[in-house]
Each structure stands twice: as structure tokens, then as C-alpha cells.
Image 1: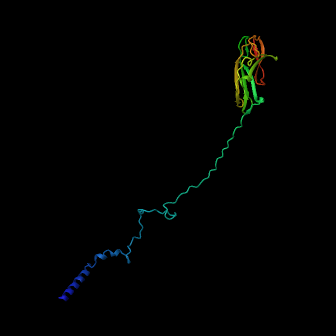
Image 2 (image 1 turned 45 degrees about the vertical axis):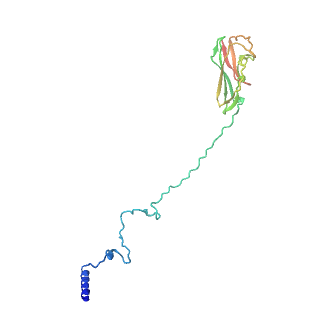
Length: 219
């Protein structure tokens, strides 16, 4: 009986080997395993980029996604600004001052009230300071060629001011006054006489400066 049983088992094993049923679950799929148990991989690179990681650009350092472009540095020279401080104005010299008088009309009738204008200006090329206070400026009327003053705006005007004026080059300031057509004297006495018809010189003054005379005619 024992011999019969062993023979039967050998017969069943031989039939199974012929039919391919000898693979066991432990060795199924072993055709894809290299000797030593290392999985085989395809030698053809995939055309798709990897799911993660950085691409290496040819010619760029390893591990860099792209070559970094560095803009050329430029150096700008600093701009130097030169500030010129204007000089502090000084007193206007007498030679730079211009003092003149104009009349409102070429001639007036006796008894009229002529309009006279005193002009004070800086004829120099630089700005300067000048005292033009009221007590220093005046208009005088004299007989032609005469020395005596028939009338002065300073005789009856006692106003004192403190006017230090900055004159720009060629700047002119003007001051108007009306003459009553009568004589006057220092201290402004009330006794006055009407100036008769004739020609008279009108001059402007600023302190010790006396301008050129202009002609005023009373008819």
C-alpha cells in the first residue's frame, strides 16, 4: 500500500509539471527581476518632464533652473551744484545816484498849481543801499541863473522818516508834490507872494546831492 501511494504521488507531480502548473505564488512574475533582485527599468528617457525637481539648462551650473542674467553696473558721477551767494549790498555812492525833476506840463499860468515829481534812482550796475528819508529829499525853484531859492518843498514839510532803501541797478523811485505858485521861506512863514510870469529852474535834491535843473515856465 505504501508503495502504491508513493507511486501515485509521483505520477500526479509529473502530470502537473507537464501542464505548467509547477509555478508557485512566490516566484510568479520573476521574469522582470534581474539576478540579485534589482528591478529592471526602461533605458528610453521619458519625453515628459519630471513631476517635481528643477530642469537643468545646458551650460548653466548644475542644479540651477536657469542662467541668471546680471545687468551691467553703471556708475553715475555725482552732480556738483555751485551756489553763489550774492554780495551784501553796501551804501550807494553819490556817483551812482541820479536825482531829477519833471513837470506835469511844459508851462503853467500864473496862479496855477504846477505838479512836480522828484525821481531818485540807482544808475550803477550793482544793488546798493541809500537813505532817502523825507527830510533829505526836496524840490527847489530858483530864478534862471539865480542863487536864491524862491520855494522849496522842505520849507513847509516837517515830516521826518527813516527810509533806508535797497536800490536794484537802474531802479528809480518817484515822489510827487504840488506847488502853489507862491514863494516860501524856512520855517514856512505865512507871508508869501505869488511868483510872477517868467522862466524858472527846478532842481531836485537828496541830502547834499543836487540834480540837474529843468525849466519851468509861468505865463
